[in-house]
Length: 556
Ligand code: ATP
Ligand code: MG
Image (tube, rainbow, N blue to C red; front, side):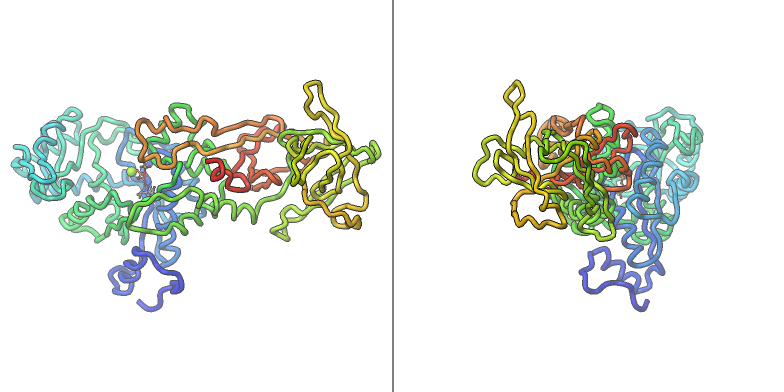
């Protein structure tokens, strides 16, 4: 192998080191990796790490990455999950070479099992799960095995065929590998290869009533597909010996398993089983609830693929488990959104302002940039009239000394418009500010300011006559606990009861009416928002992706 297309500047991770050595020595001609989800739930951000790693390796070294559904467990798998997984990988920006299913190998796996029986390396065991456990020994004591270990090859062949033909009841028999009941690795003490399950499978229907165990399916599927580097997470380290044993005894393509640390984030649950519990228990509105750490939830929340990939790159690939601060993800997100978000003004809690020296009925417009960070983002027109809304908390009746917003006698700049001065406040019957009377300074128009007046504060606003009403969903973290893995009791006890606040009637500048699902928005001085996918046309709904600054750190 000659020159490899690597960037020698950036340090390479341990898997890349292995790959470079394997390609250089000619051990493999080209790289084949796979992303192997079990279709029993939606993908979460932990899966994104595995996706970035597997697809990233072939982007860097050539070769191909397959998508393989590890669908050997019939009872928990559904087509909805298959479709969502494909959509999520595509959204992240990756494309697989082949779409494959472990269930397509059921015939071949069945032949492999017979091949092991013929070699005297597998047997049918009639013991119950309890009996098998009781004869397995402990990590420090060898197991004894069951009496069925000594069944003849002929008997095993006949019994296994009958198992496949549905002649035995569920749980009455299993097929086990015959390896070593004294192995220090418990996974080598005659692991189960097949169990009887009269379940309907989402692809093979009712053809099978025996299903292979994960260990008997995964490595062999890798080998069938000529996967060169099968990367998985650290919990599979003890399975590696068995992975290699099957490949050796069945004389298959020499796929090799390598393990890396899974991604764990603070304040985040990453287990499909637990996420399903949240969905089933209606703690969230579905797998794609914007508070979920699923790829589809994050998409709906307004995360960008770039921010997720950037997180995975920054975290890197390591051999030791760690807990990553979710604020690193939020940092990657803010950085990306700042570059791409279209700026708009939206008032969440309105206070009316009358510009008393602006003639009634007269309208004006200001042209403002869509995104000052991007000169190609264009401009929009912001209408102005005598009556506007500002945020109620941008006014104080008795402002402290360094208050740079509005109070009686104080001046601020209206973003992209004029400087105004507050002269009078009108109170409602409860003694709360009802409207402000202000005057504008004609010479202070943004872009052509000749007033010579300097003000420290700039506030956002909307023209009352032109504003549109929108709904805002303000999302916070779903969990209150930083490290859920260390908490006692049920993880659901740590759900943040204030993870969603709905503002039903926020008022937006009219150009927001053209919001699209693909665009991201910065509501000036508020945060980053996106249109919700189920937003009705006549009342737009925006999800808060994230606040402008890390206010959480301050609160806690
Ligand atoms: P879960 O425990 O959430 O159900 P899983 O590992 O059972 O996850 P799979 O569908 O089997 O889910 O995972 C597909 C691939 O994604 C596997 O290779 C798995 O190792 C990897 N993966 C899953 N979770 C993470 C994670 N948090 N970080 C990195 N990789 C992960
Ligand atoms: Mg799994």
